[in-house]
View 1 (cartoon, helix red, strand yellow):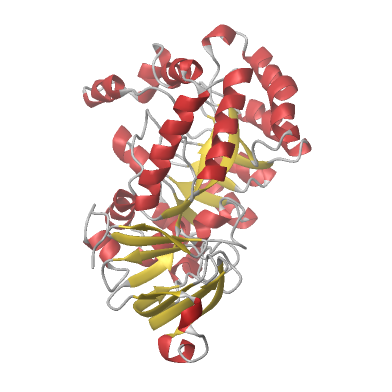
View 2 (tube, helix red, strand yellow; view 1 turned 120 degrees about the vertical axis):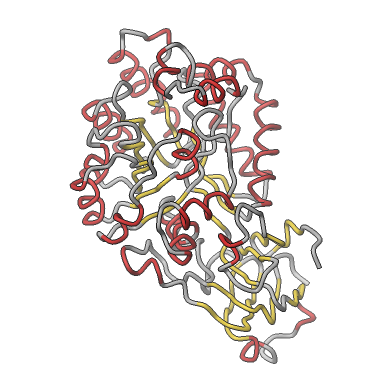
Length: 420
């Protein structure tokens, strides 16, 4: 039996989310279900996904690890397309300050926030960050995440930005979860550049970004386009320079104020624009027209006690929405996929089907990987999640509870919680 050969049979539902690109507007409701389904994976690649009665007899079960999944639902592996999971230190004290009424920007302006994590990450050794990163990836895997994006941006200097990206590259090599790296040197301006914002931007563009691109340490470049951080003009400059170096583009847009980040993402054709709590109607329209994936991060809004992004309005106006955790030590110290499903369905007025699309094929599209992951289609990676229940509708219904029973990555069973 070759590694990566698995035959799943008798699953109550196979939710395929079939497609090779992001789904926009009403198409997000199309998740395509195979009742009493089977999936055949050979050497890590999906060979077939059909009704069990149409599969059995075509394949010799002796050549596969066989999983009989009666009364279980199977979905594509979840894609967490926006995180900051490689960092040192924690900010539990700041969380308590926010509970007492301090705003995110208040804390940032008095030396907390990103600057606090920068100090701890600069001091952390490479080995410490690898150990922490592996533990966090283990947790993500248990929630059904098979691909995750990770951003730098807690170094804000040459050595630590490179260290973060090199750690992610190593974690991608040693851990079952695929790690997609993003360079976020423009996450904030460090203390040593206070009052010299243009010099910091030039430093990132001239010194750090070329090394990142040349050594293929990051696939994407991102920027925190926000009031009091990087302006629309500064963000445009950074992203255009990254594009010249061959990097794909992302943007933190309109999280705290309606600055025009969504419009900039549409103008530059970024793969995704993320956060979008205060995106304007024009920005939403522009993203829909330019097919920019709108990545929403409801756990961050929840933890900051901010209004949620207008997911329902975006979908109704033709956007392609992805959902991600924004796992980070400050504004959202959680990687809970069950919480994402609960918030999306209960508070953001997205349907369960739209939420599944947002966590699978649209999450994959937000990482420019919809042709290889994000759905159960022939020729794609064999990345699957098995729920302990017979229907996908249990995802928000069993509210806030992890109901992932098994995770299959590249056709290999990499996690099982032991439930029979």
